[in-house]
Image 1: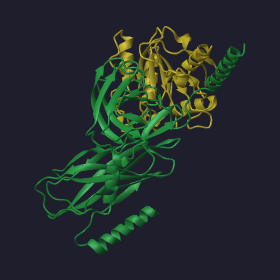
Image 2: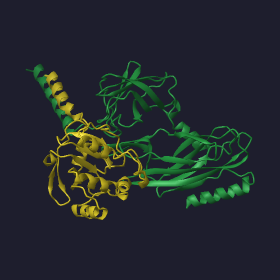
Image 3: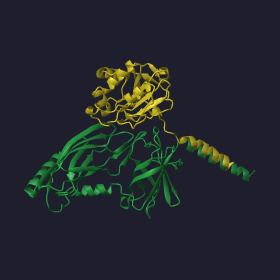
Image 4: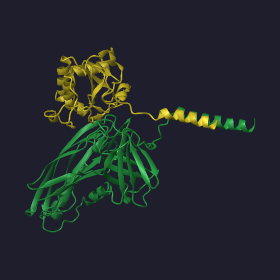
Length: 200
Length: 322
């Protein structure tokens, strides 16, 4: 009887040792459904067959400021959405935390910055951010048409807030997209992202 | 305001006491939340003889800056030196960082005042007189929000033939040394890295019996920084295990960072610098250590343990009194 009781204890304690949730390179991207800035439901699954870029964003973070202030991010969004890539900017800032935006605020900011993501997704509960293990803003993921993560990490190799560092930096997202879209293996598939912590 | 007084005070002190022998001028600057000053350890320098300067950072309560490996988020301080001809600067000597958990993320940095020292080597042929050491410092300071900070600081040092004496900031340098990891003299260290865990096994010098430990990995894409590390004693030596980074391309070949022991005073060497080869293998994770706060055992698990215990006791009673 005692043994059975002990076994029950063990079985119940087992699952509490949680694994870290994350989007892992080479594995299926965690599925999700979020509302976008227009209040429309957006499912990752609906973009199957296309390349998808996920960009974690907080417009009050100086690292995000670097890539929007230099128009680096807008340039990438325009270049790749024209090529049929789906670009999803995701804000996981919780309500009351830095960078939190309503749909209307997000739209105004996109307009002001001339940003052109396919959709701007609101994740105020941080569910999708945590499922992907999004740590910083920016934190970038590239998903291939089969729904497999082919890149996870930083936007480039110059961790700084200086606008002048954008020129001449090696952009990992560009490199991953160019390789993957031409059917080649992504050379650098994971890097340590840099930026502000995601304000969960 | 205090910064202004300090600068004026130093200028006056220099003018009254040391002039015309001149003294090491301290330049201050910084942001709203972090005061910075470039200071020297000695009162003067000698040709060809290494000396230390350092950036003293004073954080406003609640704010922090980062270690060389910031953990999940953040950015370490960067410096670009402008030095007189023939001078060379060494790397930043980073004191042992603190763990700064924010939600489900873990950063490594400094929440108290810190001195980031740098060893400078002047050329052997150097005329007596003043030299100017200048640096452009850029850093990230965070509380719940992050801001970029920067300052250009200058320090005038006097080249003199005599042996340098400890300057007014010498105490900061000795404090920083005491706060920095030591070399693991008298330790034996080994590492095995696998898919489930990266293991560091170690035997500290006699008389050092830690209660627990934490390993600050200093390279990117090696560890999940926010995941609790395992720790256990195995017949006189210890095993510490680290959860590998989810997207690590392969287990690391070398484990580098700083090992900090719990329950050991700083004077006995609670922090050591580690750089060991990691042999491939599949070590099992050691039992997880509780975080600073309560362990994250869900309430239902505790409840079920109690229920099961009651069940067991009842069963025993029934066995005794059928």
